[in-house]
Image (cartoon, rainbow, N blue to C red; front, side, top):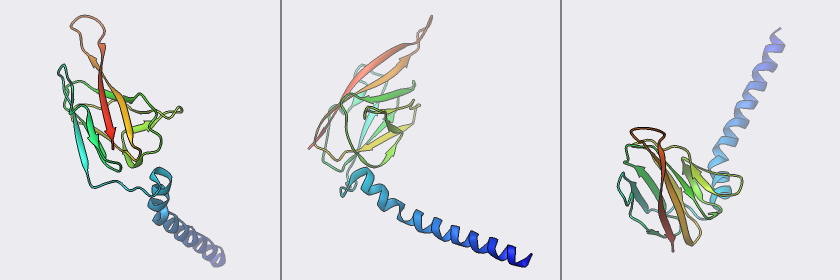
Length: 153
């Protein structure tokens, strides 16, 4: 009986050591997969989403490779963001965005006060849509689409 418990304890210790080794290397592995040698830059830019005709400010937003953009929803209605061109690989961390099977980055619903962010590693111009549902007094809400652009130097 004592011998069985010792084997059980030793196997748990080995699993714990393996787990700790793997998780300690994960950030390095994640950086290689998500962004290669390019690390997020020190610059963070904020894009404010509001309930106004413009709705996206600043627009366009100009950044450098490795910079991060945080979209902040100040609108009372939920919004979603969808990039029109493929972005390719972005650096991590990615917050509230996901890449669909075609390589297009999208968010789910971002509630009032919520954020989403991406860090860009490739130069180019990236157009995106901000989609919000606008409540109508009578009937179904209508979808309103605002345009935005990111320019990465």
